[in-house]
Amino acid sequence: MKKWIKLFFRKKGADKPIFMAIFVLICLGIVMIGSASIGAVSSKGTSFAIRNMAMQTVYVLFGLFIMMALTKSFRTKFINYRFSMIMYFVGLASMCVCVLWTAKGSHAWIHVGPITIQPAEFMKVAMILILSYMLTETDAAFVVKGRFRTAELKSQFYKDKFIKCVLFPLGLMLVAFFVGAGIQKDLGTSLILASICFICFMSTPRDYYKKYKKLVWIALGVAVVILGFLITAVLQGYQMERINSWLKPLELENIYSSSWQLVNSLIAFADGGIFGLGLGNSIQKYDYIPEAHNDFIGAIIYEELGIFGLALIIIPTAIIIFRLLKYADEIQESKSKVILIGISSYFMLHLLVNLGGVSGLIPMTGVPILLVSSGGSSTVSALIAIGIAQAIISKYNKEQLEKTNTY
Image 1 (tube, helix red, strand yellow):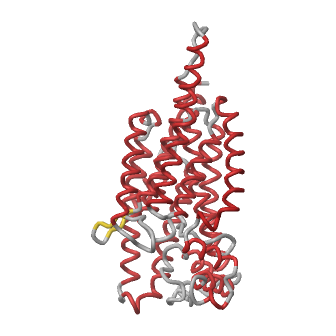
Image 2 (cartoon, rainbow, N blue to C red; image 1 turned 30 degrees about the vertical axis):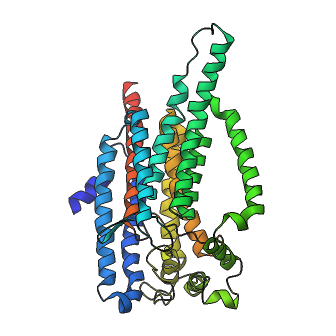
Image 3 (spheres, helix red, strand yellow; image 1 turned 45 degrees about the vertical axis):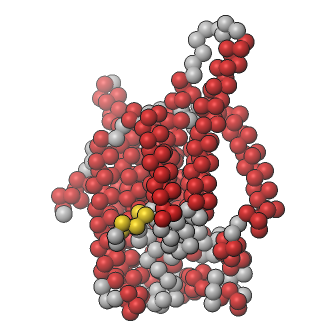
């Protein structure tokens, strides 16, 4: 075990603060999953907490193995058109297959015996890689050499470029979003996926996209205004119920129904105060917050560890985000830049949406805290993303070291 920990932190060229932040989040997650699960042992068996900790440890070890392999072997040149399309259609097909199973009112999971897989979590990382290719190398392939022989050839050239560089990647984003929101009925995860795609599109450094970025902002503004007027017609009953319980959580008719989890989450935050009640001393985990080890684990961490516990979530995640953005700013290669910004947005959105939901700042959407909440799909996909990012960072650091040694 000691040998593996040393290997974890001595990976040549990789960013050590990111690995340290990952290590803190993983350890916090396993400990707090066990603590949060204790509240349900009376209804789910005395081994429930141990089982959850053991399963999360297995997910972590599997994810770490893939992360280390990707850190060593991943290269951005692997991402081409064929690889992108295979990833996209496999991911899309996996999301569609989920209609065969229903859980918590949505079709977001594939059930294989005791294991559940959430394809949309892996699709988030896949879309970052796909768009890194579509929004950089596709544009770079359309090079004008000399003059066009006719106006028709010129018109056709720019028409093809618009279709392949703008419409096609936007179409991929929209289809993935509507499969998640419409077929899977998982609006929260779909909005995160769409937001990651939007940030990737806005982050591409290619000059060709400047005017289209402005148009996308305008289209987004118009869509938000239209949705504001049609929200009752577009959203389904249970989704409107979530919004209503968020706006009026303390109404008597909501407290014991749709607002139950939110109200008890707010009680957990109030009880936690500055220093918390102490590790293992949460009251709300005793069936006041169902499935406390999943989406609402942030409330249990605050109740038991107070501000210190919240810092153990926010500070390591912030380190990951800012280190990725730092390298994205320094690295000149367009594809790597989009990937690093996409992965940083992946971690940022999960943190903001989850803590915003459990604290009542925004409607709860069922989004986990990466590497802290219980869940194999989110844990493994997060570690895959870190492995890809570290491979890019490692390559960049080695190149910089070689340049320094040359002088």
